[in-house]
Image (cartoon, rainbow, N blue to C red; front, side, top):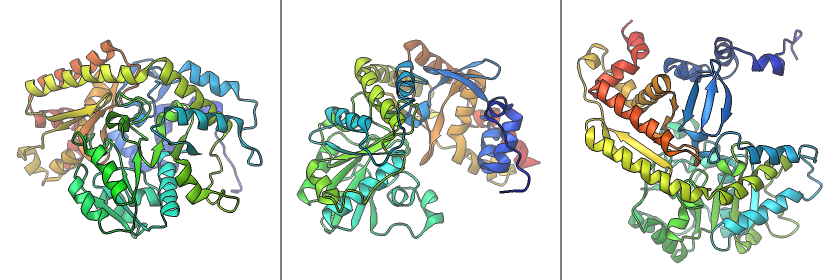
Length: 464
């Protein structure tokens, strides 16, 4: 410990202003991230949240179309989920020498809504942790070494999850990664079969819709054919529903769309109701027992905070809210409405929008690539590089700063802006987004016009 300790109390922390937060973040957390958000004027201080809305310190209201990357299916601070966490405030939150009452209950409830005979669940804290556990389970149960994954996938940034994430930008600095992990193109069953024929494949892991890859929806029938191939070649199918689950795509889980039952399924994000960190992997009794059955193996995979009482209470309440409010049907209906509106904008402004895709309220808009122009030439090509890397972020900056709508680009495809709002969003709020986008396209007139309008800070820094 340092000789002089200068702590910030909780009350003082809550009352920090935007400038103070930015300074502390740059000094003690992540200066590069602070600089990026500052460049786009994203580093606002939000002080209140409810439903689809958040408010900044000046009491200006913003609509959240990012939804915690899928963690806020129920909106901010859903009263029933908050109340559930408060209800268990006096229970032991962590007590490893006992069987968790709420853990048992949530395990039962999750088995009621997951596909087929998935019934054995391990609870943890994050999606990446769930993926790590699923990979370990598949290897232990199959006694095989290799894992196949999809190009442009995103399963997390811990070492195992990163090893099956299809983005070299994230993998390269940490090589060598976990060995025997091999990619195939997403949506290509022929390439998958060629890989599975090689043998010794413990598992094939995929997202039913690639979120961070740019909201990539596979051809219809792809998941069903994948299921058949995995069964044919004795390979476990791991479906990552961390972002697509709990009603997001218009069904409880995205694999329900083709009635596919995976061998192992990863869930997270909205499982915690947007209130508590909570994720899990779930599997069949047979696979669980092969890997973790019996006294000697029942604790070879554990998590200190996994199954804590507050998180379990949030998960129990979240599933109840999802079913009571029929959020899957809401996502299906509202998603179709938003997709139709965005496709109308694509027809009207084809120079901006290349493609609109998605299902339910997981929607991506891909922009056309920028043509190289005069501004690019005088900055030696640097502006074009930044615009290509962050163009969707510039659109997001316009939405945030001029229309008070929060969104972001997808991590593996920065030319795609994502719309992933809470499933409780209203038609009127969807119309606000559509109107804002139309006004942006209309007033910008061209792709470069939008870059110049929203990227003044970037241009200034490049030409100074």
